[in-house]
Image 1 (cartoon, rainbow, N blue to C red):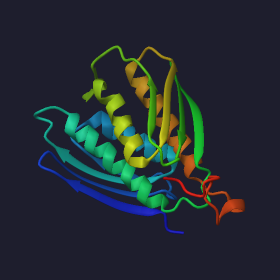
Image 2 (cartoon, rainbow, N blue to C red; image 1 turned 135 degrees about the vertical axis):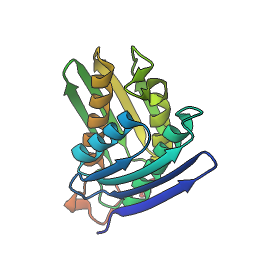
Image 3 (cartoon, helix red, strand yellow; image 1 turned 60 degrees about the vertical axis):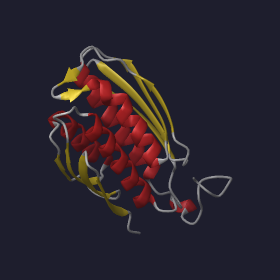
Image 4 (tube, one colour; image 1 turned 90 degrees about the horizontal axis):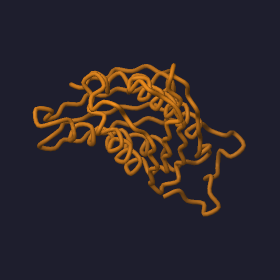
Length: 197
């Protein structure tokens, strides 16, 4: 089964290409003008064992909003396309990830019905060069474009870097489980409705 995708999006504000292999080894090549976001996407790739290539440019001279939002949209669409009809997947997954002082819980259901629960607060507006005000918006756009019910709760934490890293690593592990295949259900869609959309 080939669970790979290549998605691009070009607007007057951004130009983004994402290549994804769900059944990869955690190899990444991430390029955007936001260094801290690159670091988080590398963590997503490594801890989810997703091979991920991202080339993203945008009008960050305005601010980071357009690039962060559009990158989340393209990433979510890449997962959606790579999963195809979703036959045989676990569908749901969760993980609680500790990162020094931080503890993040992430749960995901690839139900086809987007919804975000986000319970996280940051102390600073910027973590490295990343505008933390855009964190919730990134995950909203990801939830919608991926068609996923996404729950993100910060259970402990003081350092904003540790908070964000714990969240992205927990997301990686939760997505890895949700995307994984159950050999007992290889020909069925994991829903009593027999459809996930």
